[in-house]
Length: 224
Image (cartoon, rainbow, N blue to C red; front, side, top):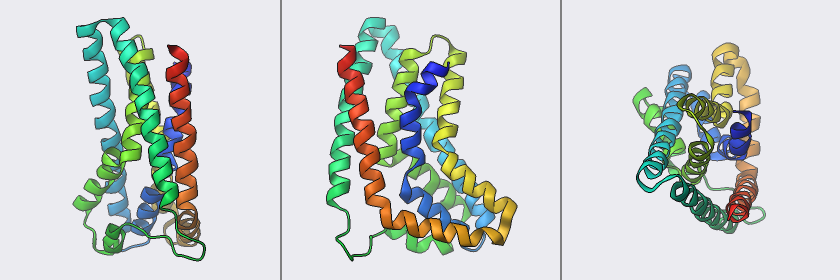
């Protein structure tokens, strides 16, 4: 069990350290109706990760049944290679889009509407940022395929998937719980964290995508 979790830990950390969702959550936590909206955002985030993971697990297991264990394992290896290449391309794109020296980093347009967001929209936004965001989608798919290939029982698969999702969500769950407990006292720390993430967003994402992309390609090539 620990070996499986160790294999998917880089992907979980890669999702957890996504600056844009964290910045969006912080803006939500600093807005009116922060507690309810942030809880809905967190639930949406967890649901988005869970849905993608379950779909990938089902596809890998279906391939194991229809094509056989060997073919399924080969498919997972090719999947790692393709996902790794896709992450490297995303890293290159992220680095190319970084702001020039002295230029302010551009943020997604939806962040400007955070103050007026309703709980239902917060739920959908969390699900989209975790499940549909290209980087998170690729990392989630890569981790779920590893879990499906390595786990030997349904219980192992379920536990490893849950642990992966919780680790990948720690930077979302943490601030939400912090604000629920600390209330207005959390504002200063959240504001400072938002400023730092906004400034270093491109560099953080480029390094994460590059490291995990190389890791997936290396794992895929090493197993052939």
